[in-house]
Image (cartoon, rainbow, N blue to C red):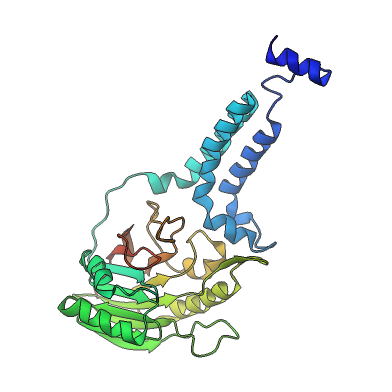
Length: 325
């Protein structure tokens, strides 16, 4: 006796065909496809759902192999056919990022790293960063004591340095005009000091550099809690927008992926490479790139993650093509 015949006996009716089974699975595939192609329209209500979806957007592609497996187990031709929708949507959205391209020329190498305030391996961390042969290094979560240790570790390779609060810049080129930038969300006291602006005087070019660390986000009882980060991103955007130098670099731990529409006031002012998935957090199994090097009036031609340090983040190195002064 066939499985379908047994089903008919047990249910008292004819068995469903392969095109009738798996309707919920097919519906799930349709929903995933819609989220992929229309993620910017998901509202930031109900616990900042829009930001949550955009943070993990590439991982929605896992719905394809999981959907195929579930469809095979359910013996549903309808569900297998429906899986083609999220597959096509993922390719449509992310093909530019996975398509290999030849990096454009660059004249400035910038390394950004959240070194973690719990990281005790300053020498080892500095070794990883220096291996990328940077012209400029921006660090977040540095203390007064560790800032001095990093200065010693970078040595003659990056002799110029400025720090402000828990961020710092080390450079092979002279730095001038170092100023604190207030990106505190409303209600946060003055001890929260996480943004520094300096001017990097390179060979034939002048670039204003913002080193920043936006507030962390959490998944809590209220959903995806991003309000402090969003407010800080808006303040940083105002500072970048007011910057008079034509060439600007923003480097830091933004605690956001670039697809997150909640930080659009900032990302609308700058550009970044659109190739590759350089996930940086958490270090043990990175699922999102929240550490960035962005530019206005210059071009970030390539960004890639570096190896592990004693931090819970991975560093990133960016190649930047800057205009001549």
